[in-house]
Image (cartoon, rainbow, N blue to C red; front, side, top):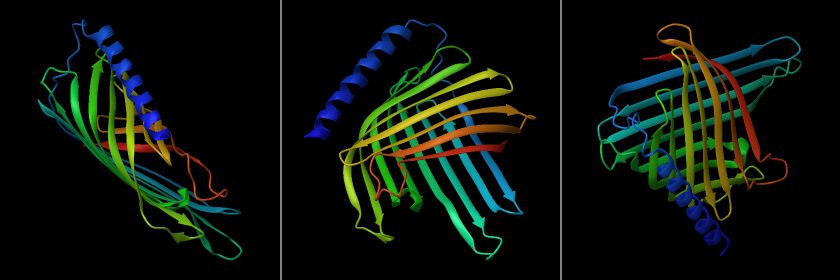
Length: 261
């Protein structure tokens, strides 16, 4: 009953937001939503090693691919983060973070010049330090892209879906739980200058037992035509965790080199 009430409320909010955006921006002349681009891919890598009183090894890698056709828009993400700490007295190494996140999405545009689209989204995450062996999601729904000017555009999405998750309790993997969800997502891209870009994204998967929210804010600056430096702050929040020893919120701050090809 509580989930049905949340679902109805969020659908009402989502409908109001879409109508408001359409009223505000449909009469803007310079909104190009039919841009066709080649395949774009970028790989980023960051590493940190310390020695002495504290020995740590931290690695972050991420791969982004995207393609914009006349009627289709595709994108995929592979994100990996791992951190280890070595005790100098015992020489024992302890893993303090180990996370893999993969997602893919396709948007079908109702018309090449239309802002509206139908999206299909899927994701898979392994992060045992979150209290879950894995979390996976599939969702479908309505998406809209608004280009406010030549430098700024934003995507908005809302739709129902399904999630699979496996909790870890006392180091024992529990049976897989499944539930219906409502996915809400949005992202903003701002080309500050020809050589710098700001991005922000927020996605929430609302379920009856757990609501998972991911967010990231980043700014990048080009070093040359294919290499850039990127600073990002990311966060993942689960409303339900296995026990009190696990934090609901995980954050990640990174400085990485990004290679575009």
